[in-house]
Length: 459
Ligand SMILES: [Zn+2]
Image (cartoon, rainbow, N blue to C red; front, side):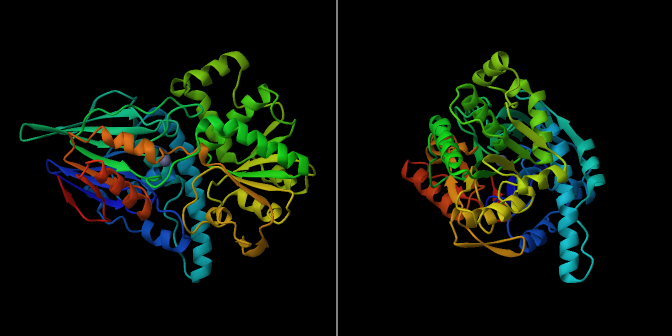
């Protein structure tokens, strides 16, 4: 048996791992590389393996850096099932379609730049084909995937529908367990249940996005958000919140709802300016089985947790553009989370130079993204081809992170100290993974290694 990673090695995007066992190949995730547009486009065009040779695929969750290349995999000949949870399947139906539109726009941009036709990675028809192959399997249901291999999804507590994948593998009458962590969530996050407590495993493929740091405790999130809103309100400014359409936006809206119910923030309009976020929020309402007790209780007592007194969900471009000339304080939540595309880029361009305004960063910002340059508080940022002074206040609230912080990752890994032959670290920038590896080595987990790009590991 061997495993080879074709992405998310010493980096956070492009999650793809091929497990070869019993003469068959199982693909774990088929995520898109993101970041620098030209480089990412080139990497996304080369899987590094033949899609027609894959026998079955398992998807951990709907984030595009895990799911985004499934339509292309199918377009290039993959004909097997794609197993995922019911919520992941629902989310993929809107997120992959949105991604297809982005691919089409990017291809048009590249074609113009290179003065030669560049086809999109995939289009909406390819998404439909991929959706037809998605088989939804609930948490805790043990399913055969190929002869001699079973898998079970466990709640990862990371985003709606997210799963850790436990594979039970029989080779020559000998059983071993491989756990693919997917992205590991955090305890006590708004909305979702806590992550599953892992059982012993022989091999672990685990993420380490925040292997080198911890987050502010989530308990402080309401107080901090209330302060940011209060201050912006006093200055008469707007708050621009670049937000991932999945999970982060719903968490922010839910926390705003709680603040509103407690009269802890001024009466200020909230605009959710992203058709994708509108669609994803609707899918949340369909999956009440995923909610934790607090969220369910609020739902029972106060009705729809995503409906505020003065919230407007905006789909049309006209309504979005009206926000440009709107006066007075307001909160604008818009995608995409790393500010690389989507309506948020326009809002940043229009609002970043006015010191009255605030850009509130609530998510991870990868290298080479506009979001990262804002986090670094560069004096001048390039937005949509023009240079703008960054005078707006930049507030960073990493307590919303959907990823386990260093302490939680260490706690997760310690479950495997005495049982795992190998723990392979993926999905983290190099510094984070090396720091995490060293921390784990110092605690006696000498079986921890950082996974390399396209280097098969014999298991
Ligand atoms: Zn994720």
